[in-house]
Image (cartoon, rainbow, N blue to C red; front, side, top):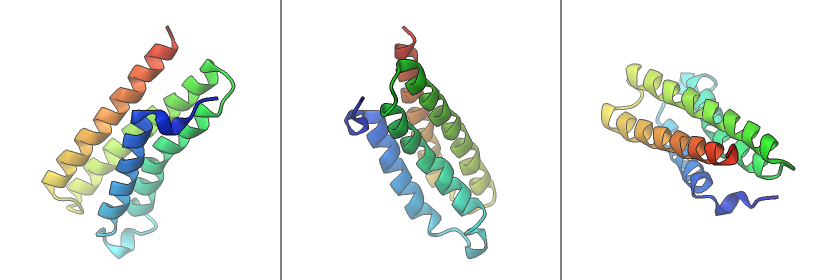
Length: 117
């Protein structure tokens, strides 16, 4: 069993989740149960699946959870694009957040590749 807190990528994804919660506080109230909720759930799914995978009994099972986290990264990347296009995020904030989620996805992908070696 692994300690998820020791992984830099888990720490990065946790901090990113906190950042998304702050940013989405400014979204329109009518999006509370729409995009706000979906973006928050997709973002929190990344460190959550990572942590859950760390509690698994095998490398294969851990890899499956990493795949789910990678898919959540792609979902977040799209939702950030959508919220930017809807003008809920300004372009600068969108670029910073998009860059961070792409980096997190790359880190998780690299870890998954290591598991397969």
